[in-house]
Amino acid sequence: MAATLTKAKRRKSANFGQDNLVGYLFIGPWLAAFFLFTLIPITVSLVLSFTDYNVLSNSGDFIGLDNFQRMFFEDRRYARSVNATLKYVVFAVPLRLVFALGVAMLLNTWRRGVGVYRAAFYAPSIVGGSIAVAVMWREIFGNDGLVNFTLNLLGIEGPNWLGRPETAIWTLIILAAWQFGSPMLIFLAGLKNIPRHLYESAEIDGANAFQRFLRITLPMLTPIIFFNLIMQLISGFMVFTQAFIVTQGKPLDTTLFYALYVYRRAFELNEMGYASAMAWVMLMVIALLTALVFRSSSYWVHYESDGGPA
Amino acid sequence: MAAVDPAARPLVVRPPTPWHQHAVVRSIMYHGLVAAAALIMLYPILWLVGSSFKPPDEIWTNQTAILPIEPYPQNYPNGWAGFGGISFATFYRNSLFYATLGTLLSVSASAVVAYGFARVRFRGRRLWFAIMLLTLMLPTQVQIIPQYIVFKQLGWLNTFYPLLLPRIGGSAFFIFMIIQFIRSIPVDLDEAAMIDGANKIGIFLRVILPQLTPAIITAAIFSFYWTWDEFLVPLIYLNSPELYLVSLALRTFSDPSGQTDWGAIFAMSALSLLPVFVIFISFQRYLVEGISTTGLKG
Image (cartoon, each protein chain N blue to C red):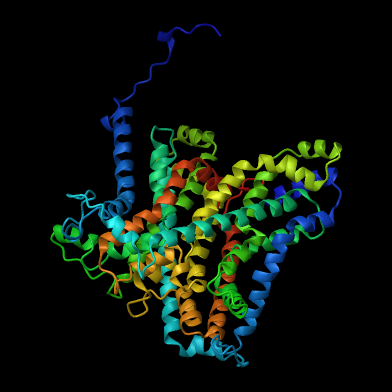
């Protein structure tokens, strides 16, 4: 991307002069919204995180690092919420990516009907974020819901999925894995870009399907895997709606995801200072993790000499 | 090249093709496997739609089946009646208003901003562009608390301002997507217009904008259905039921402690997916292209 940007810049500088006024006029709306609704709020949020601001009384005192001390050393629910979120991210993100890649490879063919299949596999993702699907999921995994009803027909007594601490989070992980549509489409576009001749020459050299996958498909896809991994990690950490509807954070806080806990503290308990501190820790963790993945990319992401995926 | 005598070709002894490698057999295996997987994927959605037509006693007894034994469309009027004297007509009106206006705001602003980044050279352009991309990974939680405090002070709780105002700057996703699109439009067109005496604004309106249609349609579809599904922000700002969006209404409507008419809940759930599916089916091509070329999340 950086390469295309500089190229575009060089090409354009030959044709256009610098035009500061017009430029800022055009990006003005974004710039205004950025300051008003992003930069200033984030700064205020940082300040709030050192106070015990309560929105009902509209007052708060500076309390130093107390919020952070409470978060890391005293608040047992906070620890449980971190646990739940990590567990969710660790399982849901890889599962989603593996399904996405597997199905994309199945659909990377010119056979008839592939368009219909693609739509079918993408459909759950198009409705994925909706309340309707969350409500439906709650019923499917309910005590006498569809899953247990089916298990019962097979002579198995299903557990109380949503009520037991060991199983509740899995209903949400399965829900996430079910919605692999977007990374699948991105993988599909990536697969179509791999030059055919690579496979042909590998076949002549006697490589079998598994070796071709390992030696050609995977390395050629690493930029896409990298992109999908970053996007899914970020959205994994922010998961909210599904837990809010399906499990409400229960049982025993095993599905009290971070975003849900921030919401509870800020908007149900009105502890906006404490919630801001939590939100800032989340920001730092996401930033750190993204930076780490970026840093690691030089070891495993393979870019072609002409400047990568963009 | 001279004709080659077929008999002169070196004789290759091939083992007979095993049965499972025949094209027809492979094709049947492929379609069987993929269609079965697709059906499993779609099953929950089909089940939801089917259940919305089941009479109350069938919902728990005829559970695994998709089709009801005795179709019971009464679930729909029952659900449509809503709760607290407010019917779903109100919630759909609210959602339609918000999704339409919100989309209009975000997409038009995004197009303007994208043009600025893609075609105007100005000091600080690369810095602002990088910052814009960074905002994509910002958790809403760090912005939403101070925003709420301010909007509350302004007395804007239970209004649509807090939901619509932040959209005046467009959305980083769509700006990025439209920038990529503008870059594929030849600069020669801009230059020709410039020679004809058009300024940057004229070029945007008369040269770039007409060509942006596919990108704008893609952005509009995504925007519409993200807005339609939006939950956290409306949940915080819209507290009175007359202002509820469909998503908020469904949550209240399906509250297990208050409602037991599952047929009606399923009916309203299925109905809320309808606009999204209609858009998905009519614009599938744009959606797929939008996601695959820009890596937008869906």
